[in-house]
Each structure stands twice: as structure tokens, then as C-alpha cells.
Image (cartoon, rainbow, N blue to C red; front, side, top):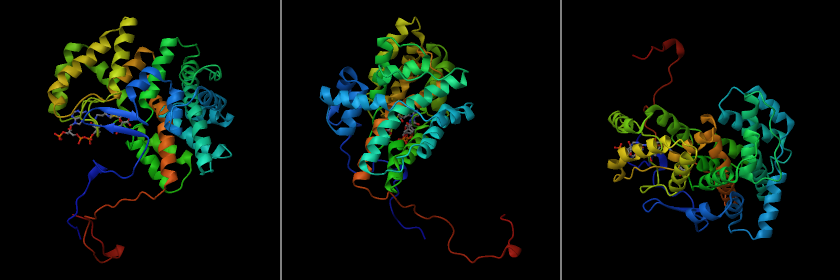
Length: 381
Ligand SMILES: CC(=O)SCCNC(=O)CCNC(=O)[C@H](O)C(C)(C)COP(=O)(O)OP(=O)(O)OC[C@H]1O[C@@H](n2cnc3c(N)ncnc32)[C@H](O)[C@@H]1OP(=O)(O)O
Ligand SMILES: O=C([O-])CC(=O)C(=O)O
């Protein structure tokens, strides 16, 4: 029954749609959001500006940004039942708790079923404000503290750190979180955005698509890599152990986490900003060893760079979070905070020219055969 057709496993190199949001040049290692290079945005923009850019297509004027920011700050509210749900599953991985809370919000928000363009926008912005609240509330509750109420005077990034730690962040810490969110905000048809598009393709609501996206982001081959990099760095322990670690991984044909990418063959352009952050922060905090271990791993992986194996965005981010004293299991949820506008805009694009996403699998099972009554069946050899 098999036919001679080409199978594109993992949809490698397949264009399935057009998109006006981000452009990735994997060979050159370039990333543009709506035509702006990621480097300019990381150096000059704020996360709120980038959200506006991604969602509305152009950078905002001061008045547009102010109105958008007001909307985002006003949305920093959670139904009380969400805190009960977080309490009930406080021992779970923060990504599971986040996904469960977002799913519960679908049942608690009166307009979650509104799958119109306006409904997607309203629910998407609200969720962008709520996701950091859920993560911070869970972190407080599992440590026996009361959740810290959102501060409407703070930016998105500063308010996240405030809710997480219960103390006002320094300007530098808030800016580092802001840049982290900008770098993670959008990345074309990555696995979680693609999964969200599949959900929207069935005309499901936005909360459902976000639950799909969160589930997909959590895996170690995608957003979970930052957590694994930190575990790897801890296991390596000292820069001079890095070469032996890499050699053993390569010999076992296991991936060195934080390296490799489906699209980039050159270095992931986002990594540069994280690398600078780790180096500076490590020096400032008198903990340069983490950066040194990471660079020793990069050195040991150099022979493979010519095969297109370079660091990705997650290689450096874990150590930044570690230096900020953030628990490892919050690294993926932090990625999700940054990715919210990317998921939203991918869902909006999908919705605007919607089509059911339904590829084919080529059957390679048994040939047609007769049904055997249970009394006549023999166990398989
Ligand atoms: C935000 C993000 O999602 S970025 C990605 C985060 N994930 C990670 O860092 C996890 C580690 N990386 C990986 O597992 C992979 O590179 C992925 C899943 C990201 C991409 O995988 P794919 O596009 O399917 O590449 P694929 O697995 O086919 O790799 C191609 C070759 O490079 C090798 N390779 C890929 N990644 C790595 C790695 N991290 N370490 C060592 N070798 C690797 C593969 O073994 C394969 O070699 P082969 O052709 O000799 O068999
Ligand atoms: O694009 C991808 O495949 C993964 C990635 O880097 C991201 O989602 O940021």
C-alpha cells in the first residue's frame, strides 16, 4: 500500500504559509521583526514597543505606545479562582501550573470564546499581562508567601521582577529582563507557534491555542533547553572539564544542549545579546565562572561549527537567570512571558486567512486483513 512519495519528516525546510511578522536568514544568522533587525530592537526598544510592533505591524508613536501600555497595565488582574487553582497544584512544574491556569482562564473569562479579530486581540493582550502574574503567584505560593500584587507604575519587565521577588528591581535588572523578552518575542514557524496555528486552524479560541503553545514550548528540544543548559553547566563544574564533557556527549551521539537549530546554520543572532549579559552580570556579581564554563563549551564545540552547529538563544539565558537567583524550573515560563506577543500575532495571522492545517502520513502498516473473532485469536509470536 505504500507509494513512492517524498516524506518531509519534521516538515524540515517546508514553507506552509506566508507571514509578514518575522524573517529569519538561517545561513547569515539574521532575524528581523517586521523589517527591524533584532539587534536594533534589543539595543533601543522596550518590550512594550516590540509587542506593539509585532501585533500592529509598525513601531508606535509616543501616544500609541502610551495607550497600548495603559491597556497592558490595566489587564494585570487575575480572577480569584486562579489563585485557588495555583494553590491546588503548587507542587507541580511551573510550566504545568501555568498551562493549567491559562486553560482555567478560558473557563473563567467571560469573553474567552470570542474568536473574532477583536476577541483575539483583547484576550491576547490580557493573557500577555496575566502570564507573568500566574508564574510569580505560583512562585510565591509554593514558597509559603502571599502573591505580590501587580504595580501599575512599573513596566512589564520591572513589574514581573517585582511580583517575582517582592522588591523593586534595579534599572539594570529590569532592562536585562526587558531585553530577554524582546529576544524571545517571536520566531516564525517555531514548534510552539506552529502548534498554536494548528489549533486556530480548527477555529478554536485563543486560550486553547495558547495552551497548545505552552505545552509545546515546554519540551527540552524547544524552550526547555535553557533549564538543561544550566544543569549542564553545573555538571561541568569547571571550565577545564568542558572538553571532556563535549567529547563524551559527541561519542554517545547525544545533543549538547543550547546548540543546534532547525533554521540557523550560523550563530543564532539573539545569542550575542545574552552572551554580553552573562559576561557583564557575572563580572559585576563576582561570579565569572559561569561565563567561563559556557565559553569553554563553545570552544570545545568549535570543530562542529563548520557543520552549522552553533549556540542558540537558550545557551546563555539560563545562566543570566541563575545569576539573578531565579529557580531553574522558571526558565521555560520566562520564555513564555516573552513569546506571548509572538504567539498572539501568529494566531491573528492564521485567523485572518484561516485554513485547516492537516498534512498526510503515508501508511506503512499491515496490508488489508480479515477480522478475527476474539475466541479464534492467538497471541502474537
Ligand atoms: C528556542 C529554541 O527552541 S532553540 C533550540 C533549543 N534546543 C536545544 O538547544 C536542544 C539541543 N538541540 C537539538 O536537540 C537540535 O539541534 C534541535 C532539536 C534544536 C534541532 O534539531 P534538527 O533541526 O532536527 O537537527 P538534527 O537533529 O537533524 O541535527 C542535524 C545534525 O546535527 C547534530 N546536532 C543537532 N543538534 C545538536 C546538538 N545540540 N549537539 C550535538 N549535535 C547536534 C545531529 O546529531 C545531526 O547530526 P547527524 O546529521 O550526524 O545525525
Ligand atoms: O525557531 C525555532 O525553531 C526555535 C526558536 O529558536 C524559537 O522559537 O525561538
